Image 1 (spheres, rainbow, N blue to C red):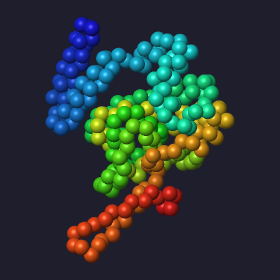
Image 2 (cartoon, helix red, strand yellow):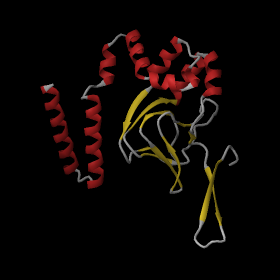
Image 3 (tube, helix red, strand yellow):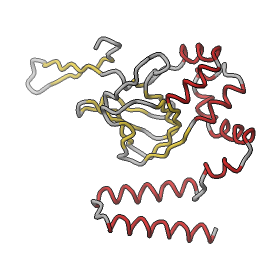
Image 4 (cartoon, one colour):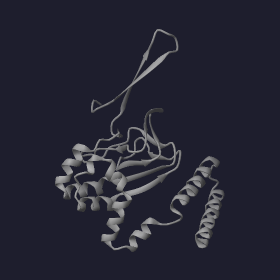
Length: 225
């Protein structure tokens, strides 16, 4: 514990020196420090990847299934997955911790990951307007197992609070689905995206007779663009 505390303070001092040396703006500096402090408080400085690398492959797979158990239990798409399939999927999942204000996706960048929200809340911003709020249990990204081309994000996704996301990369997911063909069909039918970043949301503004009163209706663009 004493060694971990020293390592923590050494890291904070190094980060502060870095921020001062490169004259990082105050707002961004505060975000960096908040992120480091919050991440350390959750992990206690433990490098999960380093621990997993010590373990043999079979044990590593069991640990990964345990770490992703919330995703597998909450989403019906995983219910018919065999033990072998779940273990293969779990080995490909990554966990990321996001701080308030962090952008997970920028509009225009490639959507190469499927993201499961385990905790926290995020907002989806299209054309400077908030079009969706995402929270625990939601899924966003792209249905790239049904599409040939890699999509560009049509909106920004930004963390509103501290968030934990479990993500799996496009290539890794497709590799598992290609091998476990029976599971692939069930997954494709049952995984419902809360927000598909490939699709734009169409916004209509209808002005009423009363001056200054505006109603905004929203509808998902289901392939009409």
